[in-house]
Image 1 (cartoon, helix red, strand yellow):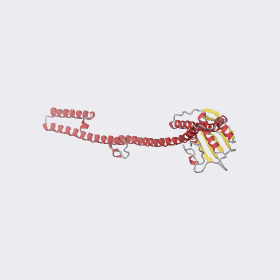
Image 2 (image 1 turned 30 degrees about the horizontal axis):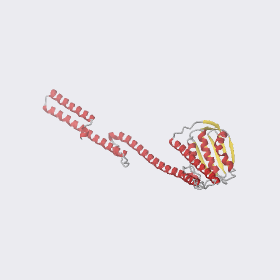
Image 3 (image 1 turned 30 degrees about the vertical axis):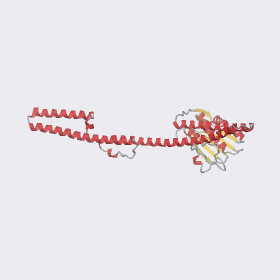
Image 4 (image 1 turned 90 degrees about the vertical axis):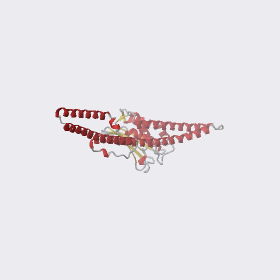
Amino acid sequence: MMKLFRNPEVAKSLLTYGLLTIVATGASALFMHDARFVLFTFILCVLATLVHFIFTYARYRRIAELSSDVNRILHGDSHISLDKYSEGELAILQSEIYKMTVRLREQQQRLQNDKIYLADSIADISHQIKTPLTSINLLVSFLSEPDISDERRHKLIRELYELLSRIEWLITALLKISKLDAGTVQFSTETLSMDELIKKATSPLLVPMELREQELLVTTEGNFNGDISWTCEALTNIIKNCMEHTPTGGRITVNASENALYSEITISDNGCGISKEDLPHVFERFYKGKDSGDKSFGIGLALARMIITSQNGTVKAENVSPTGARFTIRFYKGTV
């Protein structure tokens, strides 16, 4: 009760009602000259003041209860219901607070999911980096042997460079994924012929394909509108995946075209294809299929999909008859 009277608004109200009581009583005494009427006026004013403060006190208690419930919600108690405030003058306030608490709960759940996802991602990254680091430590121990031959030393150094390159690629890819996750990548819009786009995307893979004696068949027409650098990154990752799952002497085919609705790029191979168990998961981050080699990190296709979807595109993986896999990429010119 004392907290109520310390409220400035309540104090002003008490002063106002006190002054009105004095004025009304004085006026009745001045004009009516009847002690009973003066007493009646005084009692009526006092009763009106008491009724006002009773309702004010009840409203104050309900506001205090609502404030207490909101404070408990903010401290993590998710089992409190605000339905008891859905009637009367607090209904509007209750409605807005309820909306706020729903948003806070949703935000809390998102933050919790982000924490779980971050922990899983860190564990996956640690595992991915730990494997080549273990091999590097082993190679370094071999190189420190005093009686190692020159031929073996050169071989170990080549393996060491290869492992370091894998770690460098992994860290670079993870940084790109982090930028895409954070939404800090600003995709530019450029126009380039499909022929030039495919040449840029396949140029880093021409030597490895030649060493594998693989044939690259390219058919293109039309133009591409989008971010050239990031799109080449996505296409290179997909073509590289096809190359790694195509045997020596195999064939990789790239068909690119443009129409009024979208630009389409189809990448296919005549390799072993994708198993039914792996097909729904090939674009998941850190997912490695049963046919993946030891050098696979499981992020190349995930990065490719993120780049493509961030540019209003879609990508689909499927098997083709009699053998092989096919990736169909579409960049839509309007909102899909």
